[in-house]
Image (cartoon, rainbow, N blue to C red; front, side):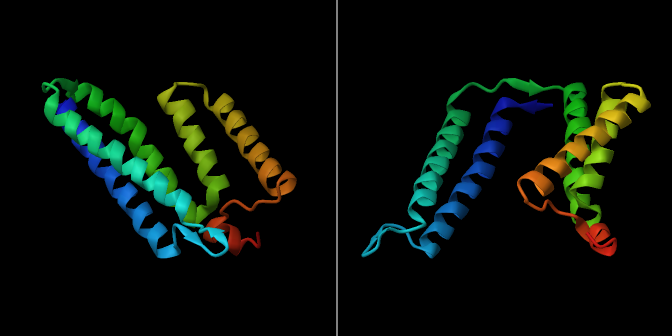
Length: 155
């Protein structure tokens, strides 16, 4: 079982770490005013400070609010069934590319998690990937990751 306090602390720590990383990189790039005007790191610095402030507020709230149950074991299992395929999707993108990974992720999500027939899941997955390819690669001329597989096939 996971309490709300544990989730708030974890969320505050993760977003706080991200906010600190944004602040540090903004300072390294340069933030503030120069003879040419506002430096490029100024906006990310402000965003990082806001993220860090929100994270600290989350952490403070975790210790002020009374502890309450957030997830039972059965609910945690359902969250894991959603989270683990998403992690696998992101992990395989460098190897097989975004398009192939998307097909398998959509097939898994639609057919296994939503109990949709495989033929329908396959059609939706293929239509989605073809649309992504057409929209990004052809219309916007933005290459999405093709992975090692795409490089081996000449894409």
